[in-house]
Image (cartoon, rainbow over all chains, first blue to last red; front, side, top):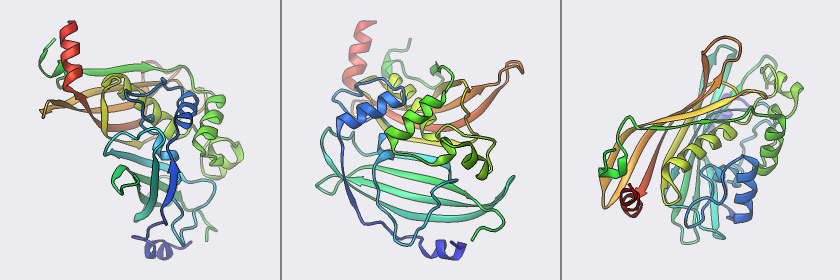
Length: 139
Length: 156
């Protein structure tokens, strides 16, 4: 992708994807990440579990399968996720910046993700910054 | 201890939470449970092709450990409001992490105590004295319900 192509996608949302908040998945996540389980009273998801939700694909945004680095991550919690609830998740390309680091040019992509309950109310929002290092020969 | 606001006040430390060395088994287990199979975490070649010295631990694994620090600080009835970090340096297999935080602000409203904190993860620099390498730096806010504050105060 070219920088202009990416910039043209800023503001575009993915189609929402329904995800199920299953306590079994929370437990598997907690065990894999060496976190205490169960989490919260009443039971809820580990603090960073929502990063594993499917937030859908932004049309036209072709990210490389390998090599992207995670620069920043933020969670904004409206309320705890409830066991068994369904979440409508979508993401938006919020910002694209070009920078030059120690290892050469890079693009910084900021995604805004949101998960809403069946009533349409926000449950959790995320801001994700990905680093895409550019090298000679990249197209 | 200051019993108003449940003992929370600026300067109160969170942790430290000292972890055993991160292993490749930790990385593989996390990749599977989180569905994050970016090969820079699993494949040496792919990591080098991305400009790294070798495979790196998922940033989200390290953030999960800071999440554990927050869960332990807030207690089971606590509720997170915000949690944001910057991944400032890579974590490699074999690195030993220490997660630490400090309370920066405490506000009470509607019977709830809202605690703001800075938190960070450092890698111990083996063989070069007491210096450490900062890998993650962030902030968080959590709310401790009034009920828990009374229970804790009542036990003191």
